Amino acid sequence: MNASAEFDIVISGGGIAGLTATAAFAKAGFSVQCLDPTPPVTERDTDGADLRTTAFLQPARNLLEAAGLWERLADHAAPLQIMRIVDAGGPKAEARLVKDFDASEISDQPFGWNLPNWLLRREMIAALQDMGNVDLRMGTGTETLFTRAGSARVGLSDGTSSTCKLVIAADGRNSKMRTAAGIDVKTTRYGQKALALAVTHPIPHQNVSTEIHRSGGPFTLVPLPDHNGMPSSALVWMERAAKAQALFNLPKEDFERAMTERSCGLFGPLTLASNRTIWPIISQMATRLSGERLALVAEAAHVVPPIGAQGLNTSLGDIQILLDLAQKTPGSLGDAAMLAAYDRTRRGEVAMRVRGIDLLNRASMVETPVLRDLRAAGLNSLYSLPPVRRMLMQMGLGAR
Ligand SMILES: Cc1cc2nc3c(=O)[nH]c(=O)nc-3n(C[C@H](O)[C@H](O)[C@H](O)COP(=O)(O)OP(=O)(O)OC[C@H]3O[C@@H](n4cnc5c(N)ncnc54)[C@H](O)[C@@H]3O)c2cc1C
Image (cartoon, rainbow, N blue to C red; front, side):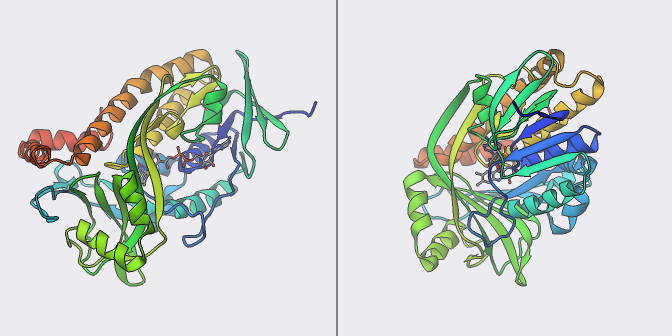
């Protein structure tokens, strides 16, 4: 049998969550191997590029700073000062209610900073290549998991294996490590898809993230740095699956007309500035967040519809808690007490966020005029109470 390479931690998955976890644990002094079967696409216009963007909220930035990643990312980030919610649920596709949630009400910092995912991969991988205690294996996946009380052995797709104290599953919604550990998930399907792409527009975004609700799901424009001298935003457009697919297949000019209409013309005519990508929307949660020598993080543990930048930010919350626990008791890395504490600390918080986003998504999908009017009235009354408004903003940033 081949000798097994040894690490403190093996991370299955080199998406944004897996790469961040690798940097965070390596910077804290642990030896880390990170594996992913898919070589990363780090150019915006190459086939397979991840054109989603990530709005890192304030707590996520602290983690990125401690992991030594933020210094490479700051220059590419667009700040998000205001979250604007627009209700366009009336008979015509026009803004009938506009409410601004301004970060200055709760902080001297913006809510967050937005960056494209393909660029995050490029910069994070470059940073990891400079870290001596990281073994980055893009192109090799994890296949099998064998655990004992004292260690775990992970079988890799190249036929070798790695031994470690802790396996972190950051291998996405169909996590192989989660399945290998026999951990179940509960999944909700909405029959909905999201289009993700970049646009340019003549009216500047002024660092405002704008979420427009009509029916089918939110239509969200999140600020990006200018593109070819024009103001630019990332668009996430959620619709019932058949409609989303039809929009995806429209010729460019028709698609641009459709998105300009759905945006209520708030930014002037929208022009495509990237390919279109399409994502199925589900909500999912693992029944427990740890197993023997295994911790689930990010989409391996929970998936939410892309609303309020909660997805990856909740994932970075997982990584922060796991890192705090690993540092609290040296020598306890991956033991039963540490992993039970992780599950206990994290499960309730994650479940609350999954439930909250599920409700917001259902409210945004409603079709009938009565329900749309109720949604607008709900937004109006929540917004008009300043303590509630501030609490919602704090919770959005990750406060418990
Ligand atoms: C349209 C859209 C927009 C979004 N916008 C935001 C936003 O603004 N802010 C936010 O916080 N969140 C956002 N999200 C959510 C966010 O994108 C996800 O939470 C995040 O990308 C999930 O990251 P991940 O690393 O868990 O999963 P993934 O990105 O799916 O990464 C998992 C990785 O694991 C790898 N893998 C699979 N199998 C194996 C294996 N056997 N071994 C090793 N590796 C394996 C895969 O190749 C992949 O690279 C959005 C989601 C969508 C759909």
